Image (tube, rainbow, N blue to C red):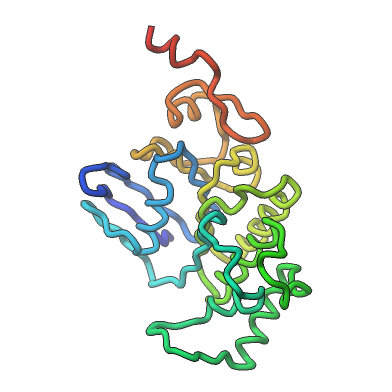
Length: 247
C-alpha cells in the first residue's frame, strides 16, 4: 500500500522550475533515499509531501491521512537561541493555534524524556543547545519530530556537517526507526544511502530513477550530468569530464 502518490507534479518558483512532471509512489514501510545535485529539487519534493509547497501542476495523493514528522536541515537550526535540549524536544508537541505562555504537562515531559532515552540523549536534557556537537543536535531534532508519533518521518540532509561516527549513529538509528515507520530522507551521503535505505529516487528536477538502492555509475552519471566518483561517500565530478563532453 502506498502512503504518497505523485502524479505529474511540477513546481515553479515564479518562472524557475524546481520539479518537472514527477510521478512517484512511496510505499508503506519504505526507507527512501532521495539523491541529486544541489538545486535539483530535493528539498522542494519534501515540502510537497509535507503540504508546505503547493504544486503548480499535477496531483499529490496522501493515503489514510498519516501523521508526519519533519527533520529540517541542520544548517537551518539556530544553535544560539536561548533554549535547552528538553525544551527543543517539547516544541514538537505544540499545537496550532499557538497560545502565549503555553505550559507543558507532566505527561508531555515524561513523553519527551522517554523519546530522548530511546535515542540515547537523555543525559543532555538540561544542556544548552550551543554546547552540543552536530551529531547530538541532529538526534535532538529527530527526537522533536518523534514526539508527534509519526507514521512517516521526512528528513532533509540529516547527516550534513557532522563527523563520520555521528553519521553512522544517525543512519543506524533511522534503520531501527524504519521497523515501525516509513522514512523519506534527502542525502548527499551516497555510500551510506546505498547501505541503509531500501530504495532510492534520483532527482534532478525530473525523477530520473526510482527503485532499488544499488548506485551504478550509469545512474549517477544520469542524475549528476557527468561521470561521478564517490570520495568518502560523497559525489565528486571527475575532472575534465565537462570539457570532454563539450568537445
